[in-house]
Length: 414
Image 1 (spheres, rainbow, N blue to C red):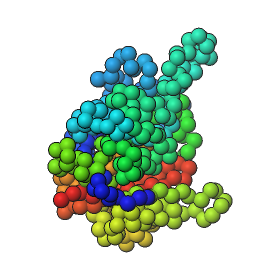
Image 2: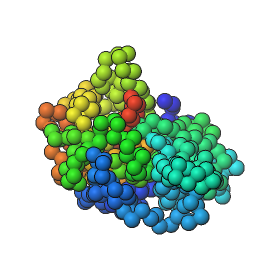
Image 3: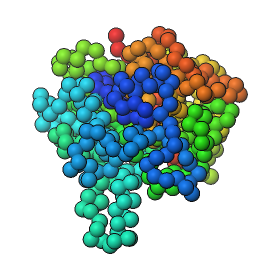
Image 4: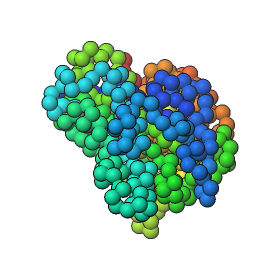
C-alpha cells in the first residue's frame, strides 16, 4: 500500500481498453455487458474430446486477430497479441506516447497467469514430432510471463519501469497497484498496465482442469453461475484489458480534464498454506479492509462490489461471508459480469476495473446476468439486471489459485 496522493495529485486512469468474448473495444464491450449479452459458447479453437470442459469464452472464434502484423504474429503468443491490440486502444484513448514524455517516463506493468501456452505447445510438438531444427527461435521468449511487457515496451518505446505480476486473477489487480506505486514514487510519469490471457489450448486447458474448479456445463447460459445454488465452477475465457494511469496533475497538463477515475486503494494478502492455519475467508477480508483503509474510505462509502465470483460452492460461500462481515448481509450491491464472458484469469480483474470505471461514468451497475439466481442462503444483493443508481466508489475483488487475494478501490472524480 501507499499514499494515494503526492505533490502530483491522485493517480488516475486516462485510457481504457477491452478485449473480451463478444465485445472488443471498451465501448462495444460495455454495451455487451449492459445488454446482458452472452459471449460464451462451444470451444472451437480445438477439439475438446477427452476434456470435461466444452464451453468457453472465445475472442474471434476463427482464431484470427485483425490488426496484428503477420510478421509479429509468428513471434508472439495470442495472449501477447491481445495486449498489443489493447495497448493501442488504451494509449490512443489517453492520447499519450513517447513524444512529450521524459526518456524514462513511460512504463509498462502487466499481469500473466501462465504465459504463452499455445505457442509453447506448438513448438514442443514440433520438437518431438520433427526434431530440434524445427523449433523456432522465438520459443525461448514467446511463452515467458514477461513477453507481453517486453513486446509492449519495444513497440511503444517504454523505457521506464517494466514489470510483470504472476498471481492468477489477483495478479491483474496487483499489476495496476504496482503501476500506481510507480507514479506515486515518481519512477514513471505514465504507466500502461493491466493484463490479458489466452488460456484456450489443449495444454492450457489440461492444466486448468486439475484445479477442479472448471464448469462441465454444456449450456452457455447456465455454465457459469456464481453465487447461484447451482454453481458448479467457472468457464474459462480469453482476453483482458490494459489501462493508462498517471497523476491527475500530469493529466491536466496534457489537457485531460475528465479522467475515468482514481485508483484509490489496494491491498494483497495470502491464504495460509494447507495445514498451516484455518481455511476460510479471513485473508480475503483482510485484503478488502486494508484496501478500504488505503483508500481512506469506510465500508459505507462503497457503492458496488465487482466480485471474484469463483462459482464453486465453497469459494462463493467464503466470498459472501467476507462481504457480509465487511458490509453487512446484503449491505452492498454485488455484481459479476464475467459470468457472461468467462473468467479471464490475469485479464479478468483489469477488465473488471474497466467495467467499474465505465459504471461510475454512466451511473449504472452492470448485471451479473439474467440467468444467475442468487442463493438466498448467501445473503448477498446480487445485481442480475442493470441498476441505475448514484455511484461514486467501487471495490474490485480478485483471488488467484494458490491462495492469492487482491482488492482494489476505484472512485469517480468530481
